[in-house]
Length: 301
Ligand code: PSU
Ligand code: MN
Picture 1 (cartoon, protein in one colour):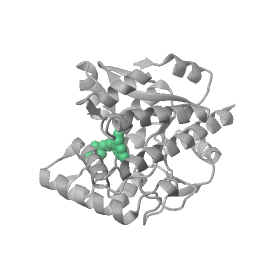
Picture 2: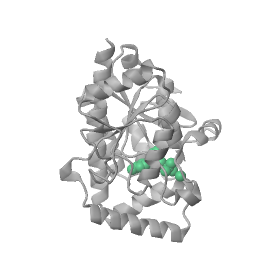
Picture 3: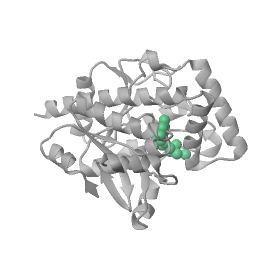
């Protein structure tokens, strides 16, 4: 595993570091906005006092803290494998490139000693889970790997109540940032409640500290609602989601190809609006993630 020297230096000095994933770059957004977004996210993390560490696998070697030119390659190159926990042995042994999902990014972040990770949305139970058992490896990873994940809530392409039930069973607290209500990625609200409402980055840092102090393995899921001015109209987004899901079924798209297909199709159906929303919510999460990491480092002193 290669850790960027700047990241090593920060970790040694107990300075805040925030991990970022690369599947969102390779499979979550189209080029060139994906690269622009990834670099902007890193900038926001720095502006808020933390060091960013984008994670990906290059020629079989996991990289924690990619360079801007490496990020550019992830954004441009077609056909980079989407890597969750189960794919790591093959991709590293066969010396391939891999874009890390939430689960794989958590694994390498934890190995490097990074405790906070910012992304857009996590995987969860897909709609129809009762028949398909299609549950993202992200949920199991949150159950066992010691990284707190900051996101904008599970996307409405998922079965939200089943996703919440699974997180509860797995012992993963779902924290809302200044909200009682579970944000649903493109929108600030959903019909569902978060477990707890945390009002400041410091409170979230304190909760994270207790999870570690009592050796409760696994992560915390922080859900951060998109700012109102960038949120999507619920009717518009739900219509696009429904249509994309119907097309996916018709085409027989399954397994790890589902999420990338839905995201890309929703961008098309909303004429790019969902992409702009997606970028804004990641930037919003980057700010909060850096603030939490910073507050946690100050707490430990
Ligand atoms: N949700 C998004 N954007 C993404 C993903 C999810 O809004 O890019 C990616 C993340 O990398 C996540 C993965 O870990 O999809 C989940 O894929 P699956 O549902 O196949 O587990
Ligand atoms: Mn799946």
